[in-house]
Structure formats: structure tokens, C-alpha cells
Image 1: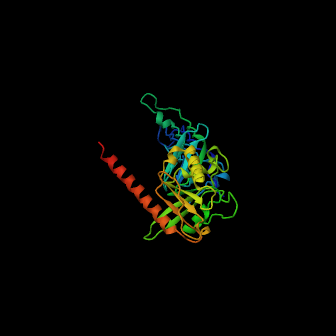
Image 2: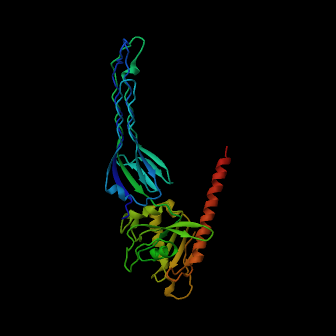
Image 3: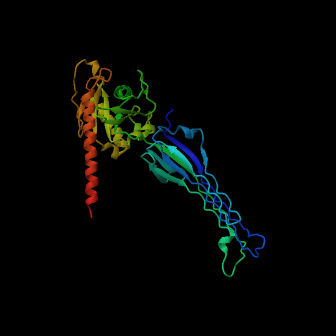
Length: 340
């Protein structure tokens, strides 16, 4: 099951209390205070783990508590600090405070961390309060409470190419042919009920990631169909491929509708590089690229995924566009580093 949004409750550990103690040793008079400090409470941290692809585990358990710190002891012994607790999530997860909607952070790469609840500080023992005029203090401090939060974890998939199209446009079939992904394929609308990722292998150890997004219908940006539930997953794709079946009644109208839904959802998303892919070319039995007005597209391609027609040209075009985008990013970073 693909789960991309959950609410969890986290509690950092409470700090241990300080100790009020006096040294007791034979033949040592007036040994003085020796109460140790309490240990700190454990933190709660969200960490990216590339072995995960969903937030499913958090539907079975929604309360996560870090260990509290141990109390201080006599002999100036500090209490043991509480164990931190780690919440592993897939890369691409946003972390928000569910009550205030504050964005606490996001984890994009393996090992990225976000501290979401800080453990309480341990209290001071009476040895801390010794002064020249107050040599036998009995004061001690209780440990501080750890942070308590309701978190919203939201997963947005990270891919190089996002396949966008209406239901039954052939997106899942294309992904299953060019990668090892095995999305559900059937002859009825909304077969794909959750996004699928596939790694596309090329020669010379090259590869890139393609995401198959569930079908987008008119009004999807308002929540119709699967709507907003999955539109957010294409926000982090580097470029878009609008998939239109070659047997569609009106190619231009279908493309314009898809572009409108993307633009209505996010202007930044609409500004990403894109191309047009006509699927189901095997219906015609010959190579044909329909005439379509797609201002700004870096290409128009016709393919048959089952017949592997036109796939080499399409994949090569995607790779060249990705290389161009990466080169532009590197150049921008280098120019920025040269600025005073």
C-alpha cells in the first residue's frame, strides 16, 4: 500500500532530576554535597532512508516516545542520558507541525536529518549550588520536560521525469517497458491508484528515474478524481512528459487540458521543461507524429511501448535534456560562487 501522508505524535524524553546528597565516608568529617546532575532526555529525529518508499509503517503506530534521562546520584554521578529515537522516512518527505502548519524541514538525500522534538535538559544536583558562603546546599533542580508535537509527514516523490496524462493514456505500460517497475495495467480508467517509480537503465551505466502519476482529469487541481492526492508528487520532478494516446479524439484539447491543470495547480511546476509523447503508435502500424501546438516543448515523440517503437529516440531525448539541465545548474552554482 502506498501511503504519502500521515499524522504522528512524538514526545522527546524528559530530563532527569538532580540529586541532593552529601558525602558520607568513614573518618571524613563534613564531606560536603555530592549530588550529581540528571541526564538529558532523548531527542526525536526524522532521518531519510532510501530503502523506504512509503510512510506505511506510521499508520500502524502513531505515538513515538524517546527515553527520559536518568536521575543524578550521590558521589557526583550524572544520570544516564535518554536514548534518542529515529523516525526513518523516504527521501522527499516534508515535516510540518500539524498544529501550527510550520515547516520544520525536509529530507531529500540519504542520511538527511531534521530534529523535530528536543529532549529536556537534566536538572542540577546540589553539588552545583556550592559557594563560599553556602557550603551545604540542599537545592536541586527537576529535569525539564521534553518537547511534545503532532507531526505531519508528507511524501513528495523525487524523479527525473514525471509522466502526466489522462487515465488510460499508456503511462503505466510505458514505465513497465522501460524499467523494472511493475505497475498495475488494465483496460479501465484509474487503474493506477498510487504513483510508481522506475529506474530506466541506459548504456554506459547511465540511468534516470521516471515517475508514473495517476491519471489527471479536468478539475484535478480542485481535487476532482484523484486530484490533489497525487498532483503534488510531480512537484519535484525535473521535467514533465505529457502522454497523449494517438487515438484521442482531440490531441490539442487533451494537451491543453493537461497543461491547464498543471498550471492551475502550480506556476512553478508549469515552468518546468516538458515534452509531448504520443502513445499507442501500434494502432496506426506506422510512424507518425501528430501536428500539435506545444509552445516551449523540447520535443514531440510518438511511441508504442509494447512494440518498443520510438523508445530509443524518446529515452535519448530525455537523457540529453537532463544533461542540459544539470550543466545549467552546475554553471549557475559556479557563477554564484564567483560573486563577491
